[in-house]
Length: 155
Length: 412
Ligand SMILES: Cc1ncc(COP(=O)(O)O)c(C=O)c1O
Image 1 (cartoon, rainbow over the protein chains, first blue to last red):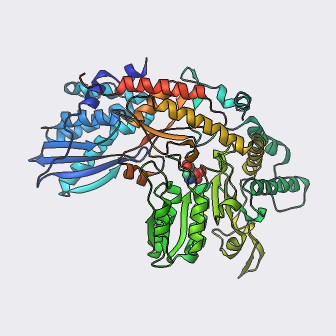
Image 2 (image 1 turned 135 degrees about the horizontal axis):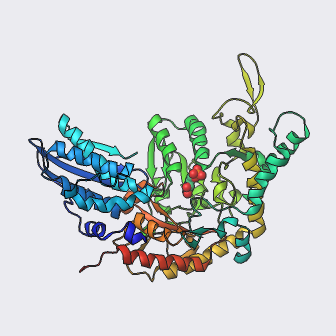
Image 3 (image 1 turned 120 degrees about the vertical axis):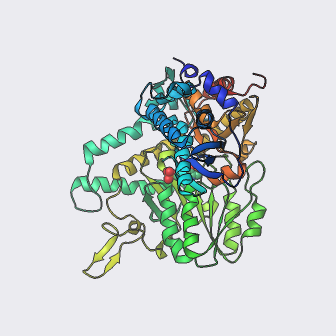
């Protein structure tokens, strides 16, 4: 299989070229968390608005690579509007898919995310895909404890 | 000029097939490949005269000591130093910087003093000074660089003052390829009593470097970037400065006499080499120096200049490429950082790797410079004695592919 079939699938390129939920969210209830991939220096800022146990708003500001950007875009699209517990399940499922090689870990309704399976063959790129997810975990922790700014790294 | 076809025969790794293609190694700035003679010398040491040095009187020990100390002489000749006693073996450039920052630096930097750097510095020649400055409440000052990545010497003149104690400067930028006018900076620094620490990691492997011409006070470089093995760095310092410096580490080898409650330290340079050193790799480093000397550093430089001229011309033909650093080969080394519009460097690296081409992507341990340039990273191709114009052509072809796979097509 060629690189384009395996890694740079159509879905990924679509999200890379037209990332959803990109940019800054502002408002009193918005919290922001910074994520860093020390390997390549890629940084992103995740903005999260949790209200009544639900992800009301989410956006990401970054200049990441294709995998990072696509993963961010798909993630924000998937979790927007979901209850926090459901988001946590999805994060687990996604990380299991990426790290443990579980083929069917991601629920059907999030089939876009399946496109990121190809990344598993390129171990250095797994971090690119995970950065937004790990940053989201951190943001949810902050939301739960009422903090508003934090920096994390994927190391 | 170099007979590159012949040189290439000396490097067994160049026969490798990567992802179904012959390896195109364009990452020598990260670490160079090794000729067979260097590889063999390591086996030769371990199979014929492996022994600890500076102790015992048996024949193996004598042979190993002579070989190890002989490399000090070779380094001394290579950088036109006046005495082998000014040559200290470390693990790498990074350790050499840390050695000076934690000894000379701690001795001389007081609150309110200034350390002058260029914005081009590798983290290795930045964080040790930054940490020292924080510890001592001293000030880090950065000179300016021009639009095309050259060090603005006028800004150095303006910024150096009576509080400037140390100027830490790279001789060649590992990102932009800029060759910095270090001799000129040394004259300016010395006029106001500052010492100059030169990071030669990207320069000594590629150009003739003479510490006498530079008139610097310290020079550091890594053997693994100049055909030698990993694990050997060089710190050269002026004898009169080294004599006054305390050791960084204590233990065996670095002493003259020891009592229960006191010690008389060994002479320079052994005072700075506590414990059993990396004997095998130091000896192999000597073989690398011989190899480079036989090629002739003027020839090495001429070869890379020619490649750079070619690369500048070829790169400029790629639509949407942004090339960083000086545009004249006189001012630059064979290190080319670039970005393709709409393609992240990480993806560029991945796609060219598919063609067997090794380049480096990311921030290259120069995050402050990346922030200055307002980019997250670059892709970087770097050349050495075995690099050919055909390899540059292959890279250019692969970049075209990267653009096609990932480049943003406006009305998709
Ligand atoms: C300019 C420069 N300085 C310092 C270093 C650090 O060298 P080492 O990792 O061998 O200590 C490098 C290598 O990446 C470099 O390019």
